[in-house]
Amino acid sequence: MGGGLPGRFANAQLLILASLADGAKHGWVMIGDIAAFSGTVLEPGTLYGALARLEKAGWIRALPADERRRPYELTCAGRAALASHVDSMRRVVATAAHRLATA
Amino acid sequence: VNGRWRDAHWWARQALRLYPQSWRERYGAELADTLAAHRVRPRTVFDITSGAVDAHLHPALAQAQPVTAGKRAAAAPLGALGAALIFGLTELAMQQVHEPRLSWARFAGQHRLVQSLTAGSLALAVLAVAATASALTIVIATALRSGTSADRRDARRGLARAAMLGALWVGLALLAGVLAAQRPGAGTRPLRPADVIAQLVWLASTPLAAVWIARHLRGVLHRARAELTWRATRRLLMAGQGAMLVSTAAAVPSLAVIARSNSQLLSAGWCLALITGTVTSLAWLVLAVRRCPPHFNTDGRSLG
Image (cartoon, rainbow over all chains, first blue to last red; front, side):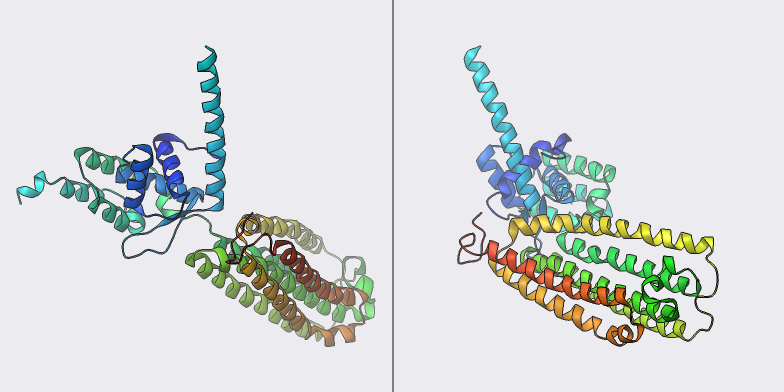
């Protein structure tokens, strides 16, 4: 994943990318979706810190706001970054599973 | 009043004030909306507070918005126009130099020096306009189809800016050419070091302009390959044809100058302008054929 997912917001960025993979969402819908599929309840400060980083990296983009709610969607670069990260995680999981089984 | 001190939402809203102004302008309303729908606990207040500290430590996050396809579209033609401007200024400065090896006069003949220089600059300006229009065809059509509303706005501004700059440059080239043609003593003074430096500046500006354009178009083209739809391709094709017509129309005024100058290079430049437009249109035609069904379904979305 070019540029990586550094620091405190790394997991939040990955969760956001995964949440947006099936379509645009705004803040609290993202929090609910992430809680549903990962069990992690993101706090709003962490969510928007990660959103700002993803937006600056060009991996997500903001859509026109509906009143105070502004949905975000993945860009092509964001989709490619998520796919790359998923591949990397898949290799890690496969290696770990294999070593656990043979240890 | 006493109750609010026990209200976690009140504390969270106060913590929002700790964010920098630029951050609140960009994300404040949506963050407040998210908070209103969130179950606020002490850890939420702590999270907002630490987020505010982080925002102060990284002020660029809320200030520097990502470069959109539309912004790239707006910036791409400036390199071509800048290089054309530098070339034109250099050539106008060289009009009094008696050194045909460094000017268009090598091809046109010394007795046609002023006319050929003027017309040569005009031809290059026309070429720049044609190339700019072709490049704009790519980025504008792409941004208009698959971009956000901000992309479309930026792309429209870029198109307007490039059109104004191109028209201004061609107009200035015409005016300067007419004025220079009426000055006595053209082609009589010797070459000076400043003239050589001016030529070197122009030679350096061309690859720099190419790098500039490539840098701004790369992201847009990547996006075009990934998101281009059949309907967008048809628009692209139409825009390519339009660009060719515009570039041809822009070249028409220089025909009279070309006829008077009797310059082979100028005729070649004129042909090149036409070839640029034609090749561009053909390229879009090939692209359209390659991208048409079965790669696209009926609602215009890529299946690839």
